[in-house]
Image (cartoon, rainbow, N blue to C red):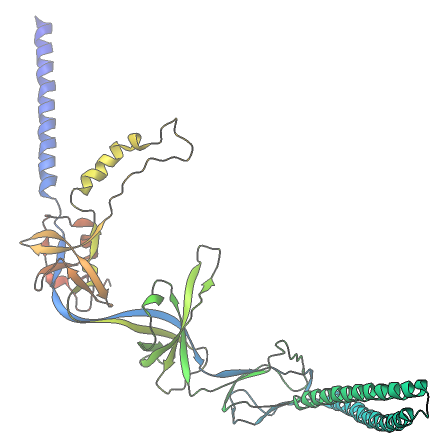
Length: 442
C-alpha cells in the first residue's frame, strides 16, 4: 500500500515537471516569435531622369605622333647637341656618328667606279675598231679578195667586242650603284630631326657605340614627339568594347591634375586583342582604344589617366537607384529548390549507365526584382533593366512613376526582404549622397 502511494506521488512529480517544461518551451517560442526583427529600410520614388551610360577604363597618356630615332649605320657618336626635354625644329641636327670608315669606303668605291668607266670606254673603242675591220673584210669578201676564214674571224671579233662592251657597261652601272650606297651610308652618319617636337627620351651619350642595321631595328638613341597633340590610350575589356564607337565623347581624369577634367573623343579602336597574364587565373582580354585629348595642357608621356566614355544616352526614362535592383528565385521556385535535395538520389547516375553519363536536371534561374513599399510590407516586383550610370538604372518594365521602392540598406535588399515581409521605413537614416542609405561608419 505504501509502495503504491510512493509510486503515484513520483508519477505526479514527473508529469508536473513535463508540463512545466512544455509550458516554458511554449513561452520561450512565443517570446522569441514576438522578438522577430523587422528590417529598417529606406525608400525612394520611381522618377524620370536622363541617363548616360559610361564605360570606365584606365591607361596612359602618349603623344599622337612620336618618332624613335634609330641609326641605320654603326659607329661611335661624336656629336650629340640635344638634351632631353629640348625643343627641336624639323631639320635640326640630332647626332653625328664618326664617318671616317664610311668616307674611306666611299673613296674606294668611287675609284672602282672610275676604273669601270675607263674599262667601258676602252671596250667601246675596241667595238668601234672591230666594226670598221668587219666592214672592210666584208667588202673584200664580197669581191673574193679574202678567204672565208678571214671573214669569219672578223665577224667573231666584232661579236666579242660587242659582248665586252656590254659587260663593261654593266660593271660601270654596278660600280655606280655601289658608290650611291656608300654615299648614302656616309650621309646616314648625320641624323636630323624628322619633325617639329620635343626630345622626350634620350638613351645614348657622346662616345657610345651604336649598332645600326637597315633591315632591323638598331640601337634606340632618342625619341622625338609632338607634345602639343596628345592622346589617351586605355585598355577596355571585351564585354565593353562592343559598346565603343568612333566619335564618342569621353571625360578624362589625369592623376597629375587632381581637380580638373578634360574632354576627348574616341578616334581609334583596336581590332586585335592583347591578352595579359595568359595561361593564368588573372588572364584578361583587353582592346586598346585611343582617345584624342581636346584640351591643351602640360601633359607628359606616361601619365596615368582614367577615361569615362559616354556610350549610350536616354532621356526622360523611369529610373531607380542602382542598388534597388537585386535577384531572387521566382515565386514557387523555393519549393522546387527544396524538393531538389530530396530528389538528389533519384537524379544520381544509375550504376549500369555508361561512364560519363549524367541525368539532366533543370536549374531555376533567379530573376531581377525590386521591392515596393506597400503599407509596411515589401512587395516583390519583377523588372527589366536598361542602361545605367553610376547612381541610377533605367527600368523598362515592372514599375510605374511615383511608386516607392526600397533603396536601402544593402543587407535588407539582398538578404532579409522577401515578398510580403514586414518592414519599417525610416528615411531619416538615409544620408544625402549615400547609395545604400546607410550612415558612414566613424
